[in-house]
Length: 132
Image (cartoon, rainbow, N blue to C red; front, side, top):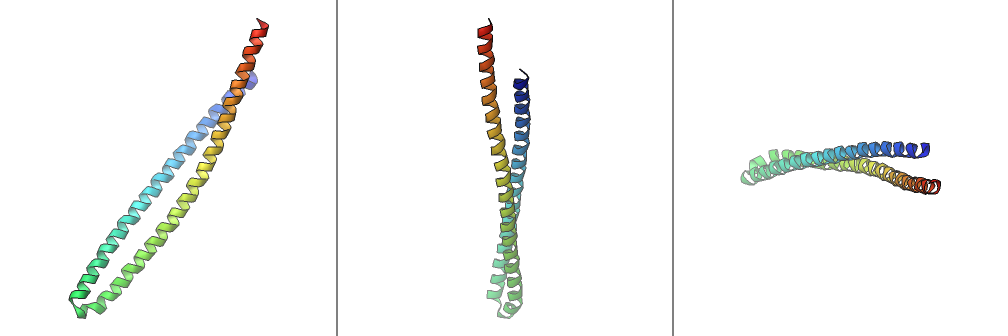
């Protein structure tokens, strides 16, 4: 009976750990989604700036030289944003994979505990049956 209580307690603790890990995953997913949205918005703004710069350069040959510097800067910012977005995505993906692995491990442990509880209940039932 003490063993059964211990297993039930371990099962309860495993469930708590699983809920915490799941909450961590949800936070990471939300953070990744927010970062992706923000990067996408920045990229859109930079693309619009780039288009405006190109149009002005087309209209005014004299403005072309001045706008080329802005165009290069916008492209550099866009490339920097893309690199930062890729790095953030890789880090978030790595963190998600780690938490998912921990969650999977906790789920396996939880399943083992459930099976052990079922086995113990079955054994207690048989013992009660023999004792009656």
